[in-house]
Length: 73
Image 1 (cartoon, helix red, strand yellow):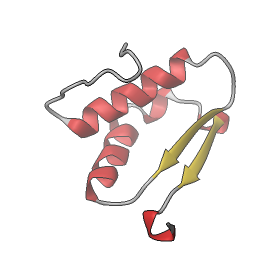
Image 2 (tube, rainbow, N blue to C red; image 1 turned 120 degrees about the vertical axis):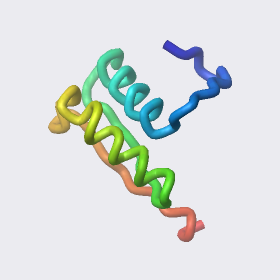
Image 3 (tube, rainbow, N blue to C red; image 1 turned 135 degrees about the vertical axis):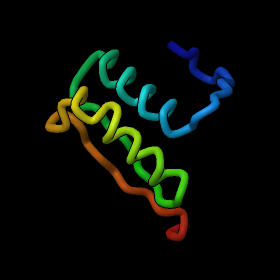
């Protein structure tokens, strides 16, 4: 578990992202769970890793998914 605000260096960002999302979902204190998604190549790789390595660990019916786009700013 990471401490909020702690700098964590990883070798593989997409896999670390997937692991952290699954960890956060499992440790949540209440339902539902929310996640905000962005676009881009790095984000795509992270979402693909989450689907491959952690998608079955999350009850997606309990997840609110939001989409953000910096072009709207």
